[in-house]
Each structure stands twice: as C-alpha cells, then as structure tokens.
Image (cartoon, rainbow, N blue to C red; front, side, top):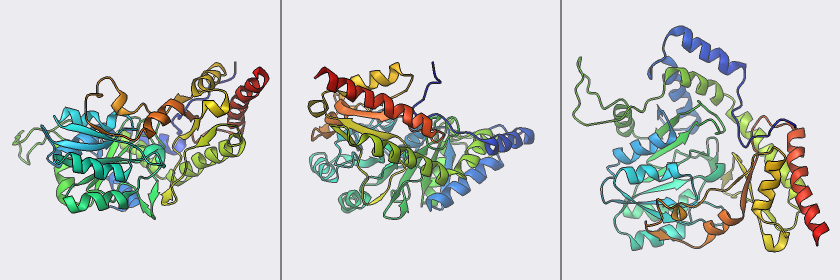
Length: 376
C-alpha cells in the first residue's frame, strides 16, 4: 500500500529545527521571550499593521477580540455560516448570539445578506467576516454596510495567511484581524494564532487579557479577569521560520490548484471554487463541487474512492446553521452554503505534495468518472 496522502500536513524544514533549538538552548520556554517579540514584529510587517499579538490559537484570538470590543451577554454578532466552528463558539461563550449569514458566489459572506441581517437585527454589535479556504471576502462592500452603522469588523483570516484583497493583506482592514497557525494551516506553530490591529489601545488590552489581565505590580493584581492565551517562545520560533517562507508556501499551494484544475475541470459536473477578481487566493485548500445530476456520481462516492486509495479528502465545512448545537440561532440564508456542503469536496493541498502525489489524486478521481461511464 503506498504512503497515505494527507489533506494538509505541516511542511517543516531545517530552518524550523534551527530556530526551535535556539529557543530551547536559550531556556526561554514560557509564553514570553525574544522569539515571541520577533514573530509578532515580522508578522505585523507582512500584514501591514503596526500591532500584532501572538496567542495560543485562532479561537483564543476571536475570544479576545470579542472581549476587547465589549461583546457580551445578549449582543448579536453576524458571522459567516460556511466556516469552521471556531469562528462561532467564542461568540456563544461570550453570551452573545450568532446571526448566520450565507455565502455569495465566492463562497464568502454575502454583503447583501449582511445588510438584510443588520436591518432585521438591530442588536448586532460586530461582524465576523471569514476569509474562507484562503480567499478574501469582499471587504469594501461589507465595510460599506457596517461603517454607517458604527459596527466593527473582525476579520477571521484563520485560513488565509498571505491572501490579499485589492493589493492589501487580509486582516488589516478590520478593527481586528486574526490568524490561525494550527498544524493544518499554510504556516504552522503546531497550535497558535495571531491578532493584528491598527490600534495600540486594542493591542495593549489584548496582550494584557491574554496574560490573565495582570496589572503592572510586583505582586499579582487583577482589576479584570483575563485568560491564559499567550503563545510560547518555543512555538514562536517555529512560526518565525515558517513565516519567512510564506510566499513559497502560497506558490506551492496555488500550483496544486493549477494541476487539479488542468486535469479535473473537464470532468462532467465538476466546478472548482472560483477565485475572486478582487484579490489573490492562497488556495490553502483546493475545493470543488460535484453536481451529481450532471456527473452521475456524488461527492461521497468520490470521497470514499479517494479514501480507499489512501488519499484523505473531506467535505467542505458543514454550515453552522446546520450544526445541532447551533441550529436554534437566527439566520439570513440563500441556500448557497447548503448546496456547497452537499456537493463540496476538499482535495489534498499540502505544500510538500509532489507531482506524483498530485497525479495519484487525479487518477483516483478520474477512475470514478470512468467507472460511472461504464455503468451507464
């Protein structure tokens, strides 16, 4: 049996080992230290913001963002429904109410539906805009809806490090942006995240909250309660090495997409996630939809065939409004995310995939269509 092909494994090289060893040898292991400072400074420069705060996960970053913006019990927060649960659970944990917004043709939040939600739900106090699978949402259109109402935008760029919108790096346009460095992301710190902002006050408050909100005293004084959410110096060293190869990692993932697109887009019923003309998608994951009425096979048949061949593939995110724990919350829907979930598939997209790996995936998919033709 050949080696399994995973969906999006970490891509680690000797530079990562070198910096992590340096961090270990310095004995700076705790969630402070010079590599944390360097990682924050370099990440801020990449995104184009003056302030960045490294934390233990993207989910923790959203929890902090909501806290700093004063989102709490009974408030409503508009959020993309086609996303991972980490975009939503912190809203609920804050005692707020998520309002799920459906997708437009780019698979991201539909600005028109967001405007409808803001008319229907006057208690919406913030908008969490997800940049899905490495592609930016239409930030200018969303800002045009939010700014006249004084509603802050939180950019969920957990899946989108390196993506751009009209020449700007995602994460820099909102009141707060945040990123994830989970092991499956385009760059990783094993587990970790980063908050970015143009506001020194927000950054200082986030940094304080992430370290149990300790006051600047010789003893432990707490005027407010915070969290234990900072990133360790050890993991920051890993992140710093990864960050320096971000452009290369994006190029490799976009190469994966180009290969799949060349060899699979001619299959009946297959459509790849479109790239918005407003920016550059990193193709963190290459995703497609399969129309079973045209293809003669459905998403699950293809996924199971890939699994049998030792190839990991997954459905696209199950929309939040369909999740048993969340289906009682309000929605503004068009049916787009339901359709994408029913027909959508994520293909292996790791930046270390070889041409032989890609060809193996392509061949396995093509065999499903060939078998379907034979059955007919």
